[in-house]
Image (tube, rainbow, N blue to C red; front, side, top):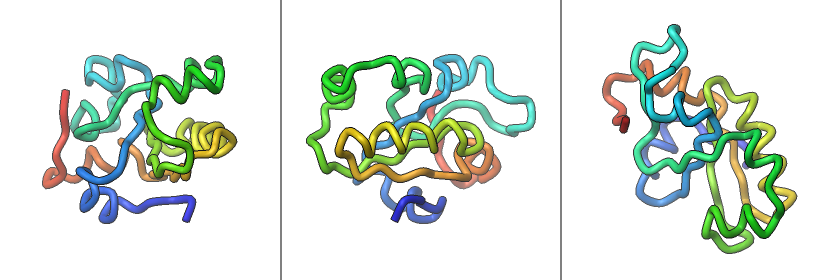
Length: 117
């Protein structure tokens, strides 16, 4: 159960914490990738750049996320690579982390899926 597909994530937006590990400018849509038809982020997602996450202490990560150990959390980025690293970090800290491999590259192509900017 390490990955999550777009259909499950879309159905669980109000249930599962989502962590966007892209840069702040990718997250807010001001500097997205030109291959994506829409810019922004998945509604409700928190932004924590993967490079910042990797520099944080375990206590800082727990405080930033505000989640109990063992909590489920979904990570995504642009294409699934940065979020794969984030999943490893989060699992090492006791979270039930899952990777949305399709990430923003997939989500941005579905006009029926919501986004925030």
